[in-house]
Length: 486
Ligand SMILES: Nc1nc2c(ncn2[C@@H]2O[C@H](COP(=O)(O)OP(=O)(O)OP(=O)(O)O)[C@@H](O)[C@H]2O)c(=O)[nH]1
Ligand SMILES: [Mg+2]
Image (cartoon, rainbow, N blue to C red; front, side):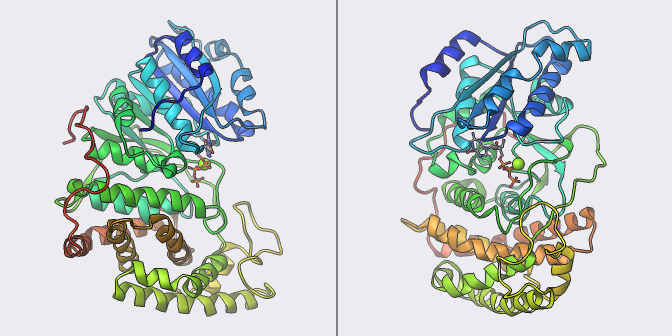
């Protein structure tokens, strides 16, 4: 990890706080409207479930101009929580908000978390819980669910398990879940969930890593943390949190940069950790902690016409890069699908009266739709014939792993060219799942994950033919500090 660059203000805070047993960290960037609720829920969780521990809550903010930091320190005083819960904690709850420094000139969620790790390590906490600042569905029990397995269950890394609407979490569903499962053999359903718990040992392990990149300073952080915990041999589990309700995003309009950062990171990590995955076949369940939940997450709209249009446009502008990064058979299959997607999207636009068709005329954004904007279901019904098969998608991702291992591979350019193919894949998922319940859509995600496992020999064959045999680029990770997983 790059050298420590904590600001004097942060060092002063650390000196003032001294030591703590349990810490809640909250990264934020312009979340004044939602972070107060998250802070109150986290405080209540600390007081209610860990009254005997020395707690601290740290908000690591990007310097938001909207008053996010003020909300954190000014929302109801900590003893308000004691009054509503009738619990008398042994220790006063410390609540801190600070502006995190960039890491090598790059700011973002990962840089915010790096400061949180450094503070947690300096305070020598046993458990660190991190929760997002745009959460609507957090309740105090989340703190127990995410820290309990560490404080009393012997686990080191707790991933969230939540009910998400069938069209939410598309990067998770299409890449990070199936690829992490197939590579490392652990069925962690939300490897980039954003809300998680880690032990002090894992925090120290993170700070010892030397493979931090600008993408990790941004949204690559979540998959970096999960992968480092898995490859470090730590004991991992999941916690059932119920529904994840947060500021949602339309995969066609909001998720391009996040996709590039997450997927660039997972590919680089796969290349570095080949010795950890080459011998793994199949996968196993990861224990889940907490009582079952039955909760319906709120629906979100996806502009499927835009997704298919972008897929088709990608085939016009990026076919050179696609032929460079995909095996010939995968390339042919993807080009055929893109050629189908374009005319289908155009015809659908016309039938729905979206004059001129194209990506700028359909409903966009995650909020509901107005009369002028057709719904996801209307658009998807018009596109019903489109089907991007599971096995083609798995081969696309595996082809990327192989090319990412080539010397000086232009990972950023390759991942940028992958975005339109991802749009095609997500479009197909949404179109095909339009009439399904969230549970039925979940079966489709599982089917795709099994396809990744079935095709793992394809990855290994290509990897071996390319002659990539040992871990590349980055020195092997430091010896694991935690307990090995079963
Ligand atoms: N400090 C900091 N925090 C950020 C930045 N971008 C996002 N975050 C925080 O990271 C958390 C997750 O960001 P979101 O934009 O909600 O992304 P997400 O929920 O992981 O992803 P989606 O499922 O696509 O919504 C939130 O708490 C944000 O406030 C940033 O640039 N700096
Ligand atoms: Mg969010």
